[in-house]
Length: 345
Image (cartoon, rainbow, N blue to C red; front, top):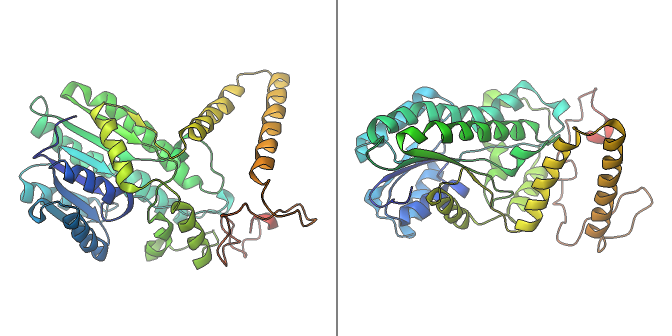
C-alpha cells in the first residue's frame, strides 16, 4: 500500500504512545484519522495533539471503545463508516497491556486481562473490520491491516509469559492474514519493536476491576521502574514512520530498534535455541555450555562499570540503570503465595 492521501486510517490504542505516533504519521500523509481508546481523557488529549501536529480537526475522529467488548467494537466500526463514509483502508491495532511476575504465580485474571487485550481484542478487530474492508475495497483500491506486536513474540519470557504468548499468537495470526488477503489485493504487516517510549508502564492503573486479582507484586515503584525502561525506547512518531515504510514495501514483519545489531543478535540467539534441539544429547550439552559461557562474558562486560560485589553475589546496577524506590520487587510474585520460590517473591 503506497497511496494514503484521502483515505481512512483507524488506530486502536491510538490515544497515546505508539498508536498516537502512528495516527500522527498517517494523518500527516493526508488520511482521515480515527483513533480508539477506552480512556476519554486520553482521547481528548490525543485530539489536541493531532491538531497541533497539523492534522485538520475535521479529519479526526476519537472514539471511546472497549476492544474486548465485541458490541462496543462493532459500534466503533459503524461510527467510522457513518462519519467518514466507509471502513478504514488502513487498520492498525496497537492497544496493549503488560504486567510482570513469575509465570507460576499467574492467576486467571492475569491471563484474561493481558491476553484479552493483546490477542483476543486483535481477533475481535480482524473479524469485525476485515470483512467490511474486503466488501468495500477488494480489487478497487489499496487496503491493509497492521498490528503492533513485540520482540517478545520471538522468545520465552518467564516473567511476562501472558504478554509473550499473546504476541506470538498475534504474529502467527498476521502471517496468516498476509497470505489470505493477497487474492483481494491487500496485505498485512506485523510490527515487532524491542522497546517503545510509550505509556504501557501505566497499564496496571487501568486494569478492569473485575480482573484485579493478580499473582504479581505490583506497586508504584514497579510501575515507575517499567516506565523508566520504556522511556529509553524508540520514539512513537519514528516508529510510525518505520511502520509506514514497511507497509509501503509490503513487508509482513517489521523489526525496528535503536540498536539493530544488538536486536539482530538477540533474534538469532532465539532461533539458535530452537535449532539446538535438533542436536544429539552430547552435542546440545556442548552447545549449551558454550552459550552459557558467552552469556557470562557478556554480563561481565555489562557490569564492568558497576559497583563491587557485596559478598552475596549481588552487584550494583550499571550507571543509568538505577532502580526507582520501591521497585526492588519488579517481576516478582505476591508475598503471600506459598508455592513460589522465596527468591521470586
